[in-house]
Image (tube, rainbow, N blue to C red; front, side, top):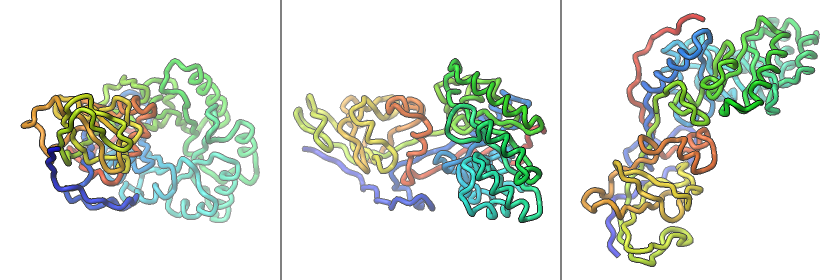
Length: 397
């Protein structure tokens, strides 16, 4: 058996923060085009010129780096940012202009209301308990506190019911203590523009909004921004679309792809017919084959579930099928159809990019592009290119 090898990649300890320092010998390279992100934000804004365009930066901007993306969008004039947890908002607050509004979509854990208020961050109140706790703090502090209200229009995940909203608005323990910044809901089926639930949710939201006619509305996630103009409301909440990815494959805004992901060829070997590859030896070579081992595995967010599903990576314009199971730190691909002189250890292959999109990977995995992105781990070094000029202002709305 003939083999040729490059120096193996070191194993970095799994740690959500900080990321391992880039040394040029990581599992691979994730590149984010900040110019494309900026262009996509502008295109989304142009789709709904009467609305304010915000940005959802939860989960570290879907794993792509909120600390790099947030200031770029703020430089374009974005002033509304959405996070899942208070800790995420606190981490980014110092990197954003003072006039930005930071919203915590999941509301607050009990006992953290004072931290949120003192930092000038806005909770999204989804339960009577959250609303009354925020109002109680406002009375204790002797001032009106800002917040958003979230209502449940049919997704049955987060939000006040109509009865709960009525009770809150008429409660003497709440009334007059909270300045409502937004009335929000979340669209469950916007990635399917024809789904009957869309019209039902919009109609339901209008009933909620009639109780608070002066409060700006926010319904539209990426899918609704692109496919449901009636759900635009006053403040848009794009997340996935910022990176050139449209839920449901809808590309009405002509978005620009912003993400590429490459990994390195570690080793190349020649195997004979009948030779097994990988754990379980699930793949048995039907004839002589040349196999390349690639420096990305499921510990990096290159899922084990890709095994045996016809998945591939790309080398230039050559599709390289995955063979055998994806391992923790590596995977194996068939390079038999590429001349030996064209590919060597140390060369890089495309996991995501021109030939293979986040959406196409999600389809193979029977999941969403959101999950594909948020799985990509710390061992992929992040590189940011084409940062746009800072200081552009959003047109007042």
